[in-house]
Image 1 (spheres, rainbow, N blue to C red):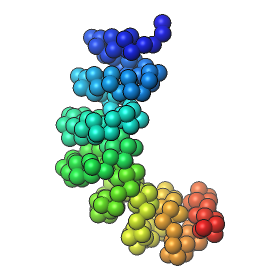
Image 2: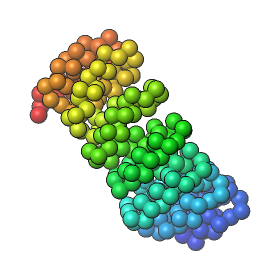
Image 3: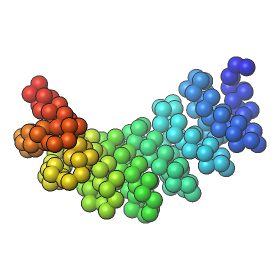
Image 4: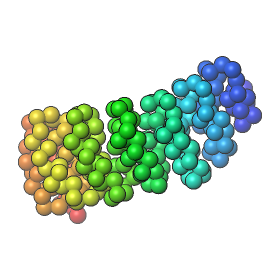
Length: 224
């Protein structure tokens, strides 16, 4: 049976949540403009798995209508009772670089106790590339949650703001090799004399992945 807008819409309105979930996946096979209209049905679904799948797809379909995508994702971020859906909304806001939602992301980050939501928000801030996110990322760097701290290091690298250098350099000697690896990645993006000095040290790191990333960063600076 071929997948058509009519057949997908029928499944989206089914009483069986499995069929509704299947419909959300089938939206990928429709024209994006049509899929975006139909996905609105699933955004408010009573089942969390359906809502999560729908909100996650907005990260690509949202380009069809960015003002509406901003409104939909803001609503999911602020009002959905499930952390998974809130996290997916943050991911999509980052992917679409919807910087108008910065204040919403900041408020939710400060008010939630869900580390998964906080993690997605920090990652989204890096993707957005807006300098106004710098203070928030600086704050996340001091989080007691090591995962959030690690993502904050990456996000500061993605942001590309040179103010991050003095914040990141102390982490270049961290006992956790994964943090050192993220620092090498971030320094590679940021560049500059201080970054090059730290990368030279990290290039001799005992962990191969860290050393390789640092060497790649050195090669980049030689080319530029």
